[in-house]
Length: 143
Picture 1 (cartoon, helix red, strand yellow):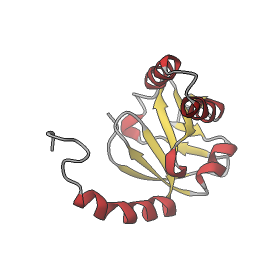
Picture 2 (cartoon, helix red, strand yellow; picture 1 turned 90 degrees about the vertical axis):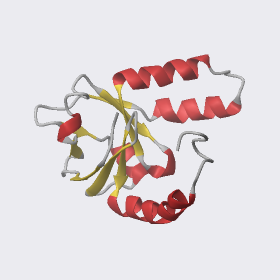
Picture 3 (tube, helix red, strand yellow; picture 1 turned 180 degrees about the vertical axis):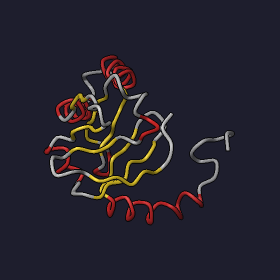
Picture 4 (cartoon, one colour; picture 1 turned 135 degrees about the horizontal axis):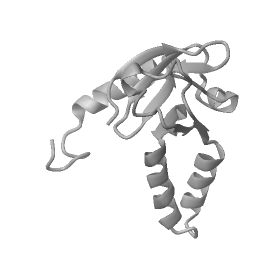
């Protein structure tokens, strides 16, 4: 499970240090791909394989499944961290997410998300009141 908020910087070669507490879990490799709201998703290989299987079993006749699969897989990049714990974020993904230098990496349960720092701040400002106002609509009977 991935938790927390980590403020990190891309270097001039497009590399990003993984949060230290997750390096061991991601040491065998990871997959970076486009996410919703113009962030990037970072999945451990096993989790990405689970998603792949779910999409494999989804009806190919459903246009939404085809569209989502095409973008998800076409933009995916498998990476392995170097000895310093850095991963290279491909240029096309950096452009999609508007990543320049200052980034925020957030834990999002089964994945990490990489956000441009300003985009994350704006998103969070928009969402915090809505989050505070939610009750049982999201998880009925749980919270």
